[in-house]
Image (cartoon, rainbow, N blue to C red; front, side, top):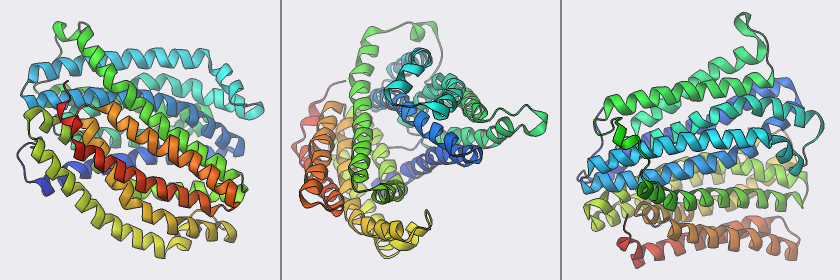
Length: 447
């Protein structure tokens, strides 16, 4: 399977071809959580709560692993654009070893301090016991999950977004097969309950990571194992950390904002909290296309920065905004009109369905501004200025959206103020991001 030429191919069609497998990959990642929830729900409400708590802890590992993978991926993309395959290969191997070691260390620390973490989160009783069962089996998959993050970032940076999709699909299929077998004792195995759910996920990560390594070394000639690239390179590791740390913090900021808004919604009662959670699921489905194009633009920006094609990056920005605007107009109209029907897919409660339809009528107007903001910050981060993109996210979410929603809703005593504040912050996010790209300070970034 050939890499897509991000440096010379036609702008619109190249972006679509590169982003489409990424969109599928994001959906597959979303399915992971839904599949585990579906099977675990058969064990009762305490097991569902335990899974939810474990996922909160897991998101921390996700932020670290995904952030460092993005950081090293940007460096590799830059080296590919510069025509330095040996340097790209060296960065790839350094990052593979670093990520696996980080995964092992993080898994060990979480295992040792799991009781303390549960205590800090206020988790007690059956939920704490079940959470420990799940996490003690799931946690050994963390190093292999880190490998998957890194392998996929490396392959995408080389211009191929299809193989990472296949790796994630394989992982999902194995998870679907193994999880019910291990949980419920099918095929003559011993029933493991929620422990089996975590073990099934861990084994799926292990298998998919081995498949990913095979693809990386077999299909991509520039990535080869040798003693020189396995020896720690302080300069490369320092550069990976320079991009990986702010990338991880950026993901954590998004998570903190989401949890903060959920807490704000909860002040108006369980019905409004349920509305926010359901609305967020709809937003996430719509956002798959936005996040996929953003991830594509990040790699495109890195490669074209390396090749000195700054004007081409701007053309990709215009193309991304244009194509996303058309797609999101269609999605937005459908969501606006069918809000109550969408709400009924998640609940039978008439009050929540009504509130979801109201939420979505505000949310749809934020889709296009959110897309513009994502495209712009990914251009900046792809150029190597992840601190610049982190600043945009921090100001838009932590300093504007989160306190703005709380203050506005407290002053008005109306839950709609939360949705209005979120929309305002999305508009600010898009304008701030667009102006930062236009300033072109990111053009001078050296990696």
